[in-house]
Length: 329
View (cartoon, rainbow, N blue to C red):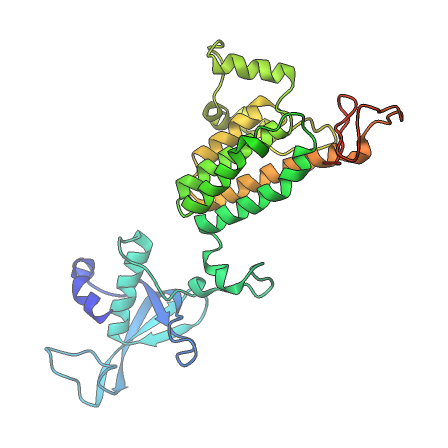
């Protein structure tokens, strides 16, 4: 930081007095146990006075000559934003003004590497996993592992509720998706595309849309309706953005999404996302909607069937009537 003072000359060219200027003060609360953790506070220079200074480092050097051990030098009074006053030397004021200007203007290259939030640990809860994985829990690789686990939890209940399974089994799509995430999970673009593929798989396993919605989707895909709105149009339209509910609520759950427009908005949000946090919210929404569909179609909701089921043998059986589902797979 001493070397940076010579590089901050442009900041002080127009400053004629420190009084009235904002300063950003740095202090190390526990230099013995945590020397790399500092606290930053903001304040305002309100005045100065001449006082006797002990030691050469506390006094300003004049014309390259060290000040005597007992000398007088100006002390600057700082009114701290969180209360109280401080009296600091001229060097501390110069550093504080430079920090404040860079911090407020978001100066390129200015980073407070010892800021306390970088070493923050939640005292009321902890990372639900191995402590060694906590720093990388928001990385693309960690999200890829999380997505594979969520897909594995949902696959068995969902495959038991559909007649057509183009995701797992002999199709090989599921195995290819898992292998791709394990190989390229370090890339954000790979996990983002993987989430869109996962959503499409769950969407098909939950039965897709009703006949009316499927017809609308087919017309829009063929551009037969010039007035159709894309996911981006729906997302940036204030009416649809506030009226369309992405989460499946209530008992009338017919699939993964409530409507065609709902799915379009979701896929637009994910496709345009830039952070893993948004992807985490997206997979959580997909899993909640899928779980709502599973709860609605669980085996206790199967319609009563007569014992004359000679066409079905053993525990491996499909639903006897349309609309009836079974978990015996």
